[in-house]
Length: 192
Image (cartoon, rainbow, N blue to C red):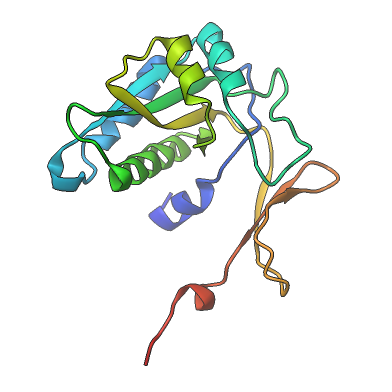
């Protein structure tokens, strides 16, 4: 698949086929991709905690918040939950901040996942202290993001933002997830 198709395929998925596991070697391959991505001042301060056992996934899941715009949806049900997580950590002994690194690395992982037919969701709404305690993460590491991964079991449709300008994603009556995106002409500005 070409790059444009890969980017279009790399959506936020929140419902997965929990019967299909992701091997830990695949998670390692996804993190390997980040080694070649840019890093501010080449500090490379990110570390990755790989979670792939059903037990650990079950321990992480309650500390995550899903789909803020879907107020009445509590998140994926049993059987639909992520089968792996990559927890992105900032090693504060290397650097105290890595905002651009986090975005670059997360997108690199998600594109690599999409290429393999794996979907995921970047989660910033995380009860960080609960995850830290559950997984015994040392204090020197800050939890930057949690990447929830699995084989998608939902349909996600991209559509143009309507005339009302509403960008909130929603699920229709049959569970199709709709994501409004702004048009190209709105994204490109000119000041002349």
